[in-house]
Image (tube, rainbow, N blue to C red; front, side):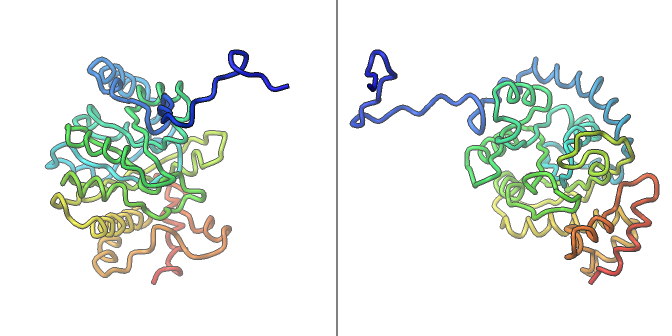
Amino acid sequence: MSREFPFAKPVWPVQVPAPLPARSAGIYYDTSWSRSKLANCTRSAFVDNVLRPAIHLIARPSIEGVEALNLLEPPAIFVANHSSHLDTPLMLSVLPKRFREKVAVAAAADYFFDRTWKAHLFSLALAAIPVERKRPDRTSARLAVSLIEDGWNLVIFPEGGRSPDGWMQEIRGGAAYMAEHTGRPLVPVHVDGTYAIMPKGGTKLRPGSTRVTFGRPISHTAGENAHRIGKQIYDEFARLADESSSDWWTATKRAAAGTSPSPRGPEAAAWLRAWNLPSGSGDGASSRLARRRSSFEP
C-alpha cells in the first residue's frame, strides 16, 4: 500500500512553479569567499612555502621565455596545454610573483567541484573557479570575464581536459572568448614533461624534468574576432611545441614559413604517436625524439 503525506515526502503541486534546488557544488558553487584578502594571503603562503618547493622537487622545471612578460602589465590570460594534474601546480609555481599574487585557475566543474568538500579545497588552494566543459555555459564565462576585469590573472587549459596520450587536443574557444570580451593579452604557455611524470589515469608519480616555455603575448582589442584569436593561439602553441623539442631558431624559422609540426601529433597508430612523443626536457630526450618527428612534418 502506498504511503501518503505526512508519512511520505510531499509532492509539489503541479500548478505552482517549483523553486530551483539549492546549488552548493558544480557550476553554481560560489567562489567569491576564496578571493577575500584572508584567503588570498593563506593561499600565497601555501603556494610559496609548500607547493613551489614540492613541485620543483618532483618536476625540476626549466623555464624559458619568461622575459617576454617583463613589459606585460597584469591582468593577463595564461593559456596552457594540459596533459597531467601536475600542470596546474606547476603553472602556479613558475608564474612571476606579480602575476602569481592574484591569479585564478579555470577548473572543470564536473571534476573539481562535483563535491562540496572538493569545491572548498580547490577554491582555497588554487583560487579555482568552476568552468563547464561539456557544453557552452555563460555562467562560468561571465565569472571569468568579471574576474579579469577586476584585475585577476587567469590560468586556463583550453583543451577542456587532460590529453590521453600527451599530444595536444583540439583547442576550444573559451580563452578566445575571454580575450574578445576583455581586451586583455593572452600568453600561450607550453608545458613539456608532466605527462611522463603523471599521465592521465596514472596512479604513481615518476619524478623527472619538465620545461615550461612562455610564448609571446598576443595583444588585441576588445571585440576582436574570437576565431582569429583562436588561430593565433594555435599557431603560437605549434611554435612553442616545436621549440621545446628542437631549438628557438629552428622553431622560429618554421613558424615564419608556416611549416611548424602540428602540436596535435602525427596522424598514426597509438603506438607510433607514443613513440614520437617528446618525453620531457632537461635530459635531451625531447631533442632525440624530435628527429624522429621530422618524417611527419609537412
